Image (tube, rainbow, N blue to C red; front, top):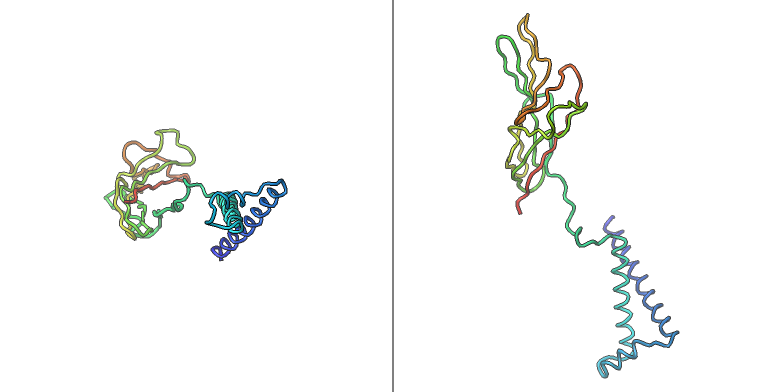
Amino acid sequence: MVAFARFATRVALGAVSLALSRALLEVAHLYGWYPERQLAQLVTGVITTEAALWAIVAVIALAIWAGLDFVFYRRNPLRRWPQQTSSIDLSVGDTQPFFATKTTDSHIRRTHNLKIENIGSTALSECNVAIIDIAPPQNVYAPPWQLRAGQRLPLNAGESLFLPFATYGEAYASGCIGDTFFGFETKGHAPLPDATKEHTVTVRASARQPI
């Protein structure tokens, strides 16, 4: 339906352009200028005055149509490439394999995983996953914070990986104290948000698409 509407619009623009070009020639005639006669004389014996008239009308109409098409559809040469859409999907969950647990004599260490999936139709290379913001602000260590397991990853079309994302230790034995914060599985220093409060974490994934 959208394609038909665009086609119909271009046909209408063509008709308008043709009418405008014919009107411009009529205005030229009113002022005593007959470009079709000059063109016919320039190429004597090749085309008739009538043919020269319609050739000029066609050229003017094409120029007007191109201008109108540019205005309506923004035909900037720098934007002729199709708009790029994301081929990477990030997701979390509360069932395995979105998390893993490891039990010791005193604590249960829970690791939450982040799923990265290539939902596109072509392979990706050098996929990188990083935390770019935490709200409320932690006011320590500037972002981004690169995931240790999320660096320069190759991902074929339809392929997915689970990356260690955040960990938290819960007390297992009586008398033990659980973590008051949770940590991120990042490279280098990263904030340690309060485990008793709610936080919003923004994650960004980027990749290269082989040409």
